[in-house]
Structure formats: structure tokens, C-alpha cells
Image (cartoon, rainbow, N blue to C red):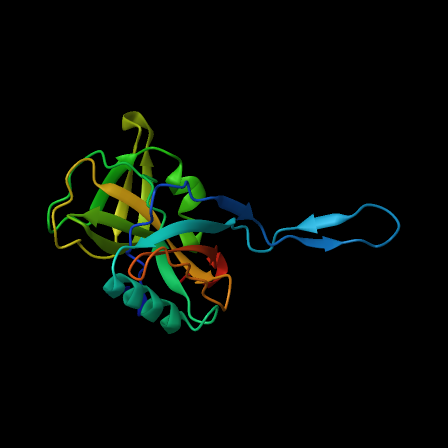
Length: 202
């Protein structure tokens, strides 16, 4: 099991047979005095996500591993990290084993994403393994349409162009119960929904 900042990282690849639904939400507070204008405020300033994904277990060993992972979550109690499995950022230069600056295509990360603690955690999918790092600084280079992201430490492995770079989101399950339908005695599928905890991200 991969861990990052003392919490488990869910590295199991979701089944792409069904496109996982993503719902965006914000913690909006409303003040309604009864007379006059209502006032809406967003104290967190962060958009949270809930995502559902389908996992297929193709052996009894995979079923046991999934049940063990679920029990370790204690339902909704224990948070975990989950990559989006999307190309959220695109490398514009390869990283060697000692690189601490990731040059990515300009997407407004420096101005819009980096100020949010929940978007300062990235996963690099290299040779079937997630390498997780925190972004400690970011700067935009308008002349080259790139941004430089300073990583808290080097990856320790080379990341070539085309490496999948995803946001790493702090999540919890949205249920305390596991429903695991069996197709055979060794094949089962389960659909999980994760709720992001953007205000709790370090």
C-alpha cells in the first residue's frame, strides 16, 4: 500500500467501462434577514468534488484486498488520498531523478489552483506506480506559456514527457456500508463514491 503524508493512497486503477461521475460543490453560507437582500458567502473558497468509480475484482485475492482496504477506512471515518486519474497538468520538460522543478503547460495553476492547499498535491504515474509530491511554490512564464512548479522533494525516478500528472485529492467514503455484488465466486464489482475534503488538506 502506497502512503503519502501518513495516509493511504488508493492506487487501484478504476474500471473505465463506465465513466465515473464527478459532482462539484461549494460550502456556501447563507444569511437571510427576512427583509432585504440575502447574502451568500463562501468561507472556504475551494470547490469540493465527489466522484464515483467502478472497481472490478477478478480473483478472490483481489476481493480480499478490496474488503481489507474498505475495513481500514472504517466507513467514512478514515480519509485517504485518491488521484483523479486525469491529465490535470501536462509536463513540458522531462524530469530526471533529482529534478525539483516541474515545467507544465500553462493552465492558470499559479493564479487559481496553487492558492488552494487542496490543489498543492500531485501524483506522477510512472511505470505503474504513483509517486506523490507536494508543490511548495509556483510561477507562471507567460512568454513560453508554461508554469514552473517547485516540488517539496525530487521524485527519485525519471518522469518522461507524457507522464500522467494528476491532482491528488484528500477524500473519504460517503458510506459506512460496503455492497459487493458477486458475478461468480471469484469475480465481484463495487461502485464507490468519494467525497473530497478540501479544507482538511495539509
